[in-house]
Image (spheres, rainbow, N blue to C red):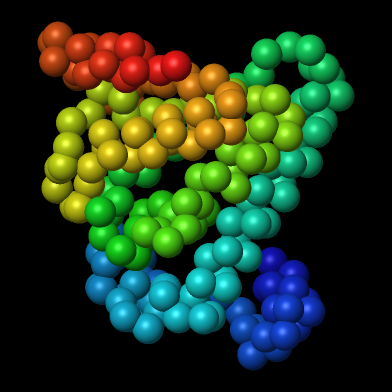
Length: 185
């Protein structure tokens, strides 16, 4: 991993980017709670480079997996799930999504790279958290995130599939899911 980063950074003219960020905090770190998630970290030249590099490596892995899947199942309808990492979605650093490999920012739709890869292999998009309302705590807004994924899926000409993330009894969440189903083209 580090050797790949060093080689790629050197090839891209940034030999000083010789390792991953060391100041990202831990599992429960909030935006601004560690240097990387504050100003001058994730939004620096290095931060943006690393985030893009990390996502690109995950997309490359996805391409290898989907290429094999298409060899085995050339005409079978396939779908891939994108996790609904909705916490900190409304925060500029999007640290939850970035940590998962989704470089999604106000000026960069990180899901389009992933969905473009799905399109290359004719794989539909499955997304979660359709039953959730927003905004919620931790700068969360699941409906806005779901709408972004629906828009990106339509942009790619793929089918959107959804599921609920958590058990939520009652008709409210069920009806929330129906509003998305009715909005799909």
